[in-house]
Amino acid sequence: MTISSKTICGFIHSLRALRDDNAVSESIGFIIMFSIVITGIAMVTFYGYPVLIETQVGSDEKSMEQTMITIQNDMKILTFSNVPYRDLSVMVSGGNLETINVSESVQYFEIEYTLSDGSPGSKIFYPGELRYTSSEGEAVMSIENGAFVRRQKFNAGSVMAADPRWFMDDDTGTLVISLLSVESPVKQYLSGIGALQMSMLNPPDTTIDDCDPTADVTIKYVPDSGNDYSVAWDNYFSGDSIISGGLTPSGTPAEYTLQDVSKIVIKEYIIKIENM
Image (cartoon, rainbow, N blue to C red; front, side, top):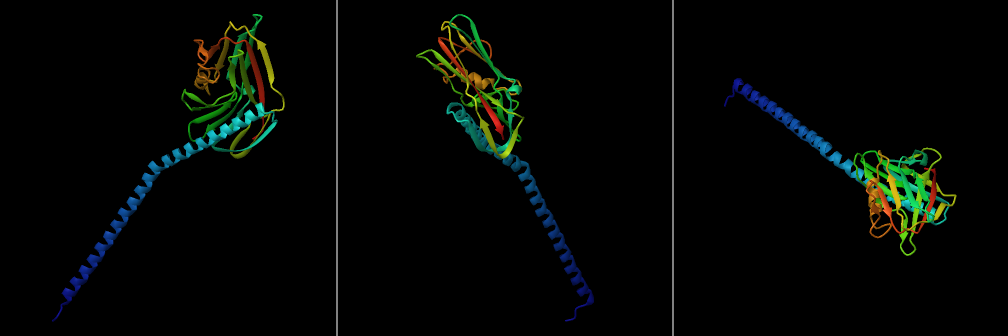
């Protein structure tokens, strides 16, 4: 059998065409696979990364809640256990912890009452703060006047996560108010792991007055409009923490009254943030 050169050339041409077709198919397959991989990466980045960030922010905020409660408990030890110093290792996650000195404090508490001789008594108190602000999320947390309060940036609401120590003794008609201020020699910030050193070297400034039990005691919280915890304090004053049934709203926002107070005891504690 004789194979002509023309037949051989045609066969070679067919092989070359098949090889070229395979090369084109491989190129197209590579492009398709590459596109799928890039699309997958883009989808993970677009949808997964925000979820990852949100999860991390939520974890950081939960961690800071525990840290702030620990700090508040250490402040209670300073004020009620006659311990002059506390040195606490803290982890500030996802934001900054800062001191708001009494001199910087915009918010204040006002207490008005009538003494047993009919003369007026009053106290205006600027508490200062130890404030945490999330850098990625919206959480703002503060230890303010012995309470642990928190809110969300750009939102009006707030909540008190841990109460201060105020109480009314119904048997004796004695109202006890503990006022706790935060002072710092300089503006201080903390992010990450650090040591928080606090002191209370002086005893509290205590005011004890006999009151006219037929007159109301008025307690008012005036918030910082840029860092408003009035809802948290409203809930505290109107709840059962101080007295069963809560204080009576006066009709003025964030102002409450209390009846049948025969004696008022006001203790002012100064917590100094030595270093952080």
